[in-house]
Each structure stands twice: as structure tokens, then as C-alpha cells.
Image (cartoon, rainbow, N blue to C red; front, side, top):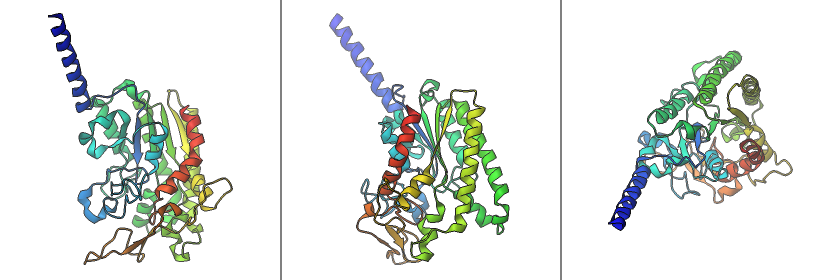
Length: 346
């Protein structure tokens, strides 16, 4: 009888353990990564239902990893993948498919959506505030406990979509850029303070990469010269970022700490072939090049013919398409960032 009782309780315990995994009950022993932002961090939240407008779900994206498109704007891994790997964790599951991968919930969740910004960018993607709302909803629904949040890390990636949208909406955007940046960072502060209020103890925020060196800007010079006119935006954005994080640290009465991930210097060290940085054979030439300025990597004509060409060795290129790094580019940039992240995460 005792043996039967033990067997019964063993089966019941195993049932609830497996049921917990199926239902997405969390493993509090794992440090979770919560990701917010845009295409530099998105691993599958951009809806495939958008068709070819969501190019990241079609060839040649994902050709290096995992050998098929997965919604990443690269030939392989992106920044969030490398941060997760550094934390000895699997990449957090995209929010959009959270119900289909409950076993990945203990690693955190990725809320980043390609094309999004701090403000609405006109693409119907969730802006940063809405992405943080999604995290709060997961906490409210019991997917993540307050205890697990207190041992988590947030990665916030902002790559400039707000400025692109602002330029499209305001023909005199250059005259109003200072006021726009002021408003943008006022909202950014609200968003970061919300992560603090939620209880995330470590928040890493990227500054703006050298947008003047993206293939979209260097194409007129045959991918040889960065556009100095555009560099002003990155400079002013990053100046405001430094001030914001400094202010948050000085006025911080909670257990949350903030860190700027200096993507700008990480990228420039590689693009300018700075001594000690990873050497790339083609620092400015994209691997996947569109046939014209009006088409993009992954574009097809009405007959289904490719309107782009793809290089043979993506690992020789820092940039994958007109805006995004290759997997090799991200790996090289992360090598620059790794010592800072190691000190921050302890």
C-alpha cells in the first residue's frame, strides 16, 4: 500500500511539473531577458501576414542562421541573440508566438518589433510604451512573477525609426530637430521609468548607431563615404541619451541600474578598421544589394524575379542589407560591447 501511495504521488508530482511547463509556469532559477525595440533586436514579432512588406520572413533573410527566414532582419542572429547567449540563455521567445513555445518562457520574452520607435512610426507596430504594456500584461496574467522580474535584465534597442518617420512627416524636419529630440527623450524617460517601476533591476539601452554609414546613405558614393549631413542626428541623439541615463542614475531611488550600450563606437571601430577591432573585408558594402534605390533586399518583380543580388560570403560584410548588420557584423560589434556588459551584469 505504501509503495502504491508513493507511486501515486510521484505520478501526480510529475503531472503537475509537466503541466507547469506546458502552461508556461516560469522557472525562477533562470535570469530572464526582456527585449524591447526594433529590427536590431526583433526575432519574429513582425507579422508574416504583411506579406512581402515583412521581408524578414522571406529569402534571403536567415540564410546563415537558421538556414531559413525567421523574422530577423539579417542573414542570421541579431543583437538580442548575442546578449542572450552571453547570459548563457536561449533567445527569449517573441511575444507574437509566446503561446507556441511555452518551454522558452523561463528565458524571458522579446517584445521588439521591426519598424517601431519610441513614438508611433506609422507602421502599425507597437511603440516602446505598448511593448512595455505587453510585459506588464504578462506579469498581470501570472506568466512572470514579481520575484522573477527582480532578477531579470531588459535590453532596449532604439535604432532611429522615429527620425525617419519625422523626416517623412515634416518637410522642414532639419529646422525642428532639436524640439523633436526634446519631446522624444521626454517620452523615452517615461518608458525607462516604467521599467524601473515594474522592478527590472538591470536595463541596457543602446545609443544610436552611425546611421550616416548605413548602405542606404553610402550607396551614392559606391559605398565608400559616410554621409556627414546625417551624422548630426546620431550625435545629438547620443548626447541626449548620455544626459538621460546620467539623470536616471542620479535620481534613482530604486534598485534599477541603467547602462548605455555604445553601438555607435562599436560600429565605427569596425567600419573604420580601428586597431584591435574585428576586421571586415567589406565594411560598407552590403551583402544583399537591391538592384535600385527604389527596391530592397528580398524584393521581387511582378514575375517573381529577384530585384537584388546576394554575396557569396556574408561573413566578409559588416552590413547585410541597406540598414542592418550581418550576423558576422553583430558578432564583431558584440565583441566590442562584451566587456561593458560583463561588468554591468556582474
